[in-house]
Every structure is written in structure tokens, then in C-alpha cells.
Image (cartoon, rainbow, N blue to C red; front, side, top):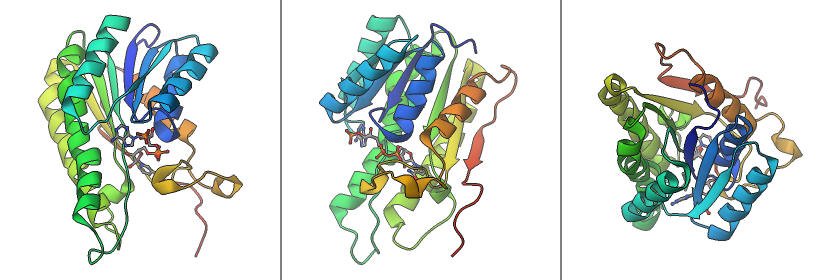
Length: 238
Ligand SMILES: NC(=O)c1ccc[n+]([C@@H]2O[C@H](COP(=O)([O-])OP(=O)(O)OC[C@H]3O[C@@H](n4cnc5c(N)ncnc54)[C@H](OP(=O)(O)O)[C@@H]3O)[C@@H](O)[C@H]2O)c1
């Protein structure tokens, strides 16, 4: 795909992986709409990216758990930039606790954001994406195939997301819409309340995932890497 002048929507774009991907797409000359629940943060992030250019960014407050809010974002994207070519369904949360302590609220927070939220993002974007051919990225996790103690909700959300992503890849490829599932290991972000620091140097960095997204977008139209696992090459030994 020739990226210059194309339009992307990145959910959860105010920080972490979403921000890194948005920054790389703006550097490629794309117009990028970023969303997050904190409106002030996402607007500030978009302003920073527009200043860097050459593409333009627009920050919109949106909770991926609310379908009507995602519809409004897609309407505004098309009105502002004339279409939608790439969706990066990235917004996600992690709450980890043994099942004995996992509350119903925490379960719904994780499943409704990481799984239903991605379904809503895709559903709301699909008509616009199909106009001229498009690309959907879902940001899953290595936790989508490796269960961990305390991960009942998060593992369930990402195992489910892998199944969802690969099913829609099969639904959409004849319509010229590609779907790739990216499954990172540890990335240095604010995920789960973490504060990135120098001690995270061994982890994958958001810009590494961004580079992968750009590479996949530039693959020949005939080829579709549908699932990509990404891990730190040299994690600390225990
Ligand atoms: N970091 C890792 O080690 C790692 C590894 C594998 C996969 N992942 C996945 O990568 C994705 C991004 O996570 P990250 O590591 O970049 O975390 P992060 O630094 O905490 O960023 C998460 C982003 O998602 C937004 N967000 C959260 N809930 C949302 C909602 N309901 N609606 C809209 N936006 C929402 C946040 O903004 P607001 O809070 O303002 O909404 C923020 O912009 C997630 O799907 C996560 O599961 C992360």
C-alpha cells in the first residue's frame, strides 16, 4: 500500500503502542485519527504528532466499549480526511488476579474492552474500509496463546481476539481488506499502570511494533502475514 495521503484510525492512540504506531504512520505522510477515553491526553498527543508531520493527526475522545461513540469517530474521520484505509484496533487493558479474586466488574472491563471493543471498532469501520480496499491490525498478545496464573480475563480476551481476528481475515480477504493479528510479548508502555523506565531497555519498544505495522502495510498486495508473534530477543534470565 502506498501510505502517503492515506488515512488511519488508531484506537488507544494517546500512549504506548498506539501512540508509537500513530507516530510512524504520520511520519509516512498518513492522516491519523487517534482515540482514547481521556480526551485531553489524546488531543495533546495528536497535536504533537501534527507538529512533527508530514501527515496530520486528529485526537478524539472515545470509549471502544461504546459502539455509538466508535460510529461517530468513523463519521468524523471520513468527514475530515475523506475516507478510511487502515484500522489499528489497539486499545486494551489488563487486570490480573487469581480467579478467586477476579471480580465481575474486572472481568467485564477486560473482555468488553479487549474483545467486544475490537469487534465494535471493526464493525463501525468496515463500510469505510471496504470502499477502496483496506487493512485491519488487531493488537493481541503472546497471552493469546500462553495461559498464565492470574490471567483468566486477559488470557480469555486475547485467545478470543486471535480467533476473532483470524475468522474476519477469512471473511474479508476477498473484499481487499487484509487483517493481521500482532501478538507482542513485553512492550515498554503504561500497560497495567506501569511507568516505562531505563529498566525496560530489554523489552520491545512501541516504535518496534510501529515499524512492523509499516512493514506489513508495504507488503505486496498478494501476500498477507496474518499472525505475527513478537518477543524480546534477550529477556532477563530468572
Ligand atoms: N505492553 C505490553 O507488554 C503488551 C504486550 C502485548 C500486548 N499488548 C496490548 O497492546 C495494546 C496497547 O497497550 P499498551 O501496552 O500500549 O498500553 P498503554 O500504554 O496502557 O496504552 C493503552 C491505550 O489504550 C487506551 N484505552 C484503554 N481503554 C480504552 C477504552 N475503553 N477505550 C479507548 N481507549 C482505551 C488508553 O487511553 P485511555 O486510558 O485514556 O482510554 C491508552 O491510550 C493492548 O491491547 C494490550 O493488551 C501490550
